[in-house]
Amino acid sequence: MPGSSPSSGTTRTADRPPDASGPDPVPAPPVPRSPRAVFAASLRRHRGRLSVGWLLLALHQAAEAAVPIAIGLIIDRAVATGDLTALSWSVAALAVLFTVLTLAYRFGSRQGVTSLEREAHLLRVEVAHAALDPRGRRTGLRTGELLAVASSDTQRTSLVIRAVSLAIAAVTAIVVSSVALLVIDVPLGLGVLAGVTLSVFLNGRVGPRLTRHSAALQQATGHVTAMAADLLGGLRTLRGIGARSAASDRYRATGQEALRAGLRAATTTGLHQGVTAAVSGLFLAGVAAFAGWSALTGRLTVGQLVTVVGLAQFIAEPLRTLGFCGQMAAGARASARRWAGAVDAAPETFPGTRATPPGQADLMLRDVVHRSLDGLELHAPHGALTAVVTHDPRDADALLAVVSGQAAGHGGEVLIGGVPAAELSLDARRSTVLVEQHDVALFEGSLRANLTAGAGHGDAAIARAVTAAAADDIVSQLPAGLEHQVTERGGSLSGGQRQRIGLARALLAAPPVLVLHEPTTAVDAVTEEAIASRLAAHRRGHCTVVITSSPAVLARADRVVVIEDGRVARTGTHAQLAASDPAYQKAVLR
Image (cartoon, rainbow, N blue to C red):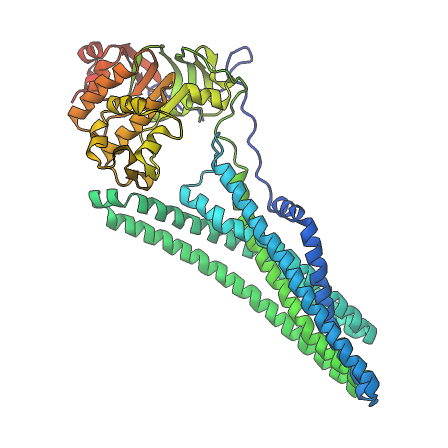
């Protein structure tokens, strides 16, 4: 978003009059899918397998409900009459009934579990696809939180398949039992329907509360996971600055917050389970009492009494199952909302369609407005080393965001080789402009793999880039040389070594336009001088922009641009500015 100038007190927006040139309007950010839409897509993806599973689970529950009905009929027609033939056929029918319900549950559950696990995998793949989107995504999530979404939330979201499957089976059991009770005795059947209605109403009242507390728990868990990942990654730094105690206190406070969220969710879950159990128990007692009274008055036979009591006991289980399904659906709804927020987040950039990158490229910014930048005009010519000094670090961050294409909707225009950056495709832009951030990212693997980043560079090109970055001593001191294995995030290297390896990687890529951010802050003065002299020589004939306060690098620059209050305040050589500008002297001279 646009920034304001601290000195003038005025604020400029990224809006432009209709006749002004500038990038195309940024598309409106997509609205994340609702949990209902996520669930509908999940069920639709597996509709064939789930249809078979639902049919078999419904058959299983219908067969379960038929067991007390069959026992009641056997009592009235075989046991009470003493008919051995009828008793033999009844036992055989019971055996068939139990075989059907066993096989139906086995194969029906298999279909549901298979669909659930496949859907969880597909949801994880979508999270990975969003995380690896070359355009970037505005999720607002840290690495640990995104990991929690990809693992915990995807699994909980897919549980909607289990919830729907169990709910269909439970409804089938309730319907069959209610019909049987209506056939035996109409008041009993109506009482069952009233009890079911009350149970569903109470579950509906508790469900939204469960959703809110489940969402809070998932968010708190994500924060704890993210903080744990950050602390483990920066453990050496924390030890070095003596901040372990403060970091431990902060993590403990975040963990306590997650604990409180978990207790709130557990309390609501316990309340939900208690309400469900109480309603089921009262319902069972009422039905059994009424059935016993009906048997004593002669309205029901002994077999019908057994059937009614058996159905009353049986129907309590699907009622509890419906409550459990509501519980699962509430948790799945909260996780689905977090999942959609990560997957449906707006892209960081909106690239154009021009696939041909500019040839001999320069970099030009015209009237750029973004965050603290307030009408910035900057030109970095081809074949020159342009140094940029920013008195406000926010100006440097905003400039990097604009040049790297991560400032969608900024005002003004960015030209690369005379071509508007907004017209270039993502591949064309990335093959032309490379922004090497101050925070160097190294990956687990060999030094060679980190330097080449998958490109087929030969040893001679690697050696030139390593030498230009003054990293040749790093390679020579390691027994395995370029095959030395780097640990995750470059933890086995010092800060200065990581910085030089990152610079060598950027130089090896040899982009037409290279933007570096403070590439020498973690090295000593001798190494800084070597980098400054070799960088200028290595990048001769290309456009290079270095955002820095290093006097060694500034002295080698063809031109120095000073940015104040979001605008270019002065330009000149390092010697000219150092001799005439007290603010510049204070910022860069050591």
